[in-house]
Amino acid sequence: MMLGDVLDGHGVTIAPAQKQDREQWDEVTVALVIPAPDEDEDPVSLGEAIAKAVSGVRKSGQSFETLQRQQRTVDGNPAELVKLHYADKETGREWIEELVFIQGPDAEIYSVALKSSPATLAKMEPPFEKTLDTWKLPKPGPPPGAAAEGAVMPKRNPAPAKHAATPKP
Image (cartoon, rainbow, N blue to C red; front, side):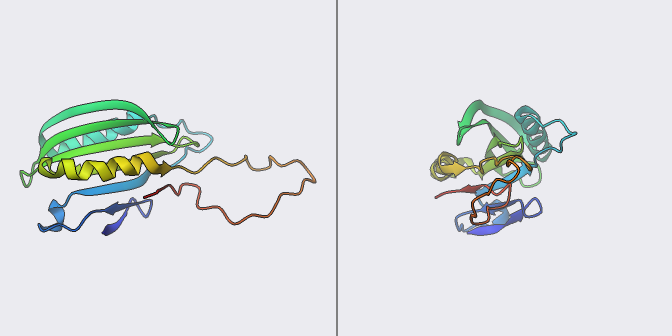
């Protein structure tokens, strides 16, 4: 079930239907979290993206604990996972969050995040891992003006948006 767009339409949150209030649902969010830098900007590293995300989670939780941190690859691109355990400060509900940040071909950063109660984590992790295993990032195209003068480029269907990354089921 799609719960809605996030980050100004650069991502989506999905979840299986659940019995408790929607704020208590386990969910997966997939998003472009940091766009490709402009030519005059330095790219954000995966470590910097993780530090910012962990800081945000730490502010909303108590009894905060990092359970795992791991470097990996997703669709051949560098990625890092951080797994966190905490209790929400307002509700006291325990959460496990698995955040995977993926460096795209243009130094943009995508995130695939699982937020689950410890009791349902075993049920939620397999579809989360499948999302990561089947993730396909857009391939970088030639830079503008790279075609030789007078060369005829073949016609093709319009490509998806530059930062559209879609997990394949």
